[in-house]
Amino acid sequence: IDFNQATFKDFENIPRMDIRQRSAIFCQFLEFMEENGHMNYRLLNETGCAPEMKTRLTGSDNGETYISLVSNDYLGFTQHPKVKQAAKDGIEKYGTGAGASPLIGGHFEYHELLEKKIAAFFRKPADHSVIFTTGYTANSASLLCLLQKEDLAIIDMAVHASVHEGCILTNKKTFPHNNLESLEHILKISKDKYRTKMVITDGVFSQDGDVAPIADILYLTRKYGAYLMVDDAHGVGVIGQTGRGVLERTGLLDQVDFLTGTFSKTFASIGGYVIANPDDIKFLKFQSRQQIFSATSAPSALGIVKAIELIDEEPKWKDDLNKNMDYLKKGLTKLGLNVGTTESAIIPVKIGDPHKTGDAGRMLLERGINANPILYPAVAKKDARIRMSLSATHTKEQLDKVLDAFDYISKKLNLV
Ligand code: PMP
Image 1 (cartoon, rainbow, N blue to C red):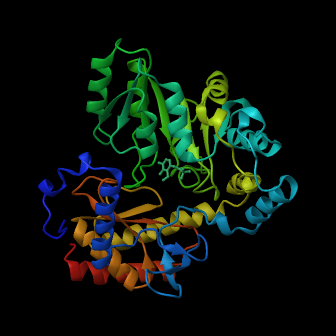
Image 2 (image 1 turned 90 degrees about the vertical axis):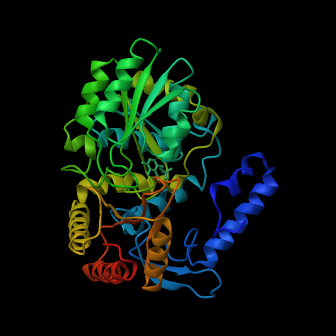
């Protein structure tokens, strides 16, 4: 396939091809991306999550330093000495792995402590939480367990891939992003037709950084007898007076039926959680296939416990992050660039055209900045953008360098 000239017809046969043929074509596509300097994916990080990272572009022998806007380590806790020490203490005490699934021998003291801590963080007793090995499975595995063929999932089009995957065993209807009329229409026509109806939305959306109208969504779910699940992976630690996320800001922490989230962003490690009523939590602990058949987090998870404590002990980090969000957003807007309606540490520069977006990614790298070009299918075909994740520990000098680069790129590519 000549990817420069390709039309939809050239791809028509691909679904009928054997896996070897499909992967061969895909590899050709990766080569095409590389030839165009658009292959800034799976870049090798040699230094960890930090405002600056060393990475090696394909073909070069030595890593070079880039300003990093690709990590969701929002408060910079992956490098916090107390978090690192706690993770080391966990390994020292329990070794490096948990060795089994929680149900059959892999449920350790530190898991129990983590469940207690994350529940308490959301002002709930310990029996209101269950942890998962990733944020992805906190969504996918719990939804696969909760919703079956008799049920209906009603989801915002822009929810995370893990929610879509969690709904493959159930009936699924999507509504356009944050569109309440459409949500109400689906709820209305689905009334009394299903055993369980669950509305699922992100708190903060992962590609636009905007926030769901949770109070209105909750009102509609109650009006039509549905449950509500909110995934606030990107809101926690960032939004709300004390960093409890979108539900704190809207005063609804006590209202939603299922709150899900991750330990891989603000909490600087890996893992996920579900907060719900004790019966639902027990059901998930004993019925979710991941809880039964897959090993749980390693003892370095003690670092997460410290990260949770630090949100209250050192609020400075959230304040610094909020200042950085404000500074970059205002600077980009002043340049005339489209940052959409973000209210979080995810700052998109919406470009639209995928080729221009790829070029912008390459030009940023050439200027010492690593930020992700996001293309279809992560976002709609005409909605390509550069996506940046900010950290509390980015400096003003680094953000100024980013703004200078965007000023240059915007003029070169006619982005405004
Ligand atoms: N939910 C949302 C909204 C996310 O953006 C992500 C991560 N990109 C996840 C869930 C999955 O979290 P994890 O990386 O911990 O698997």
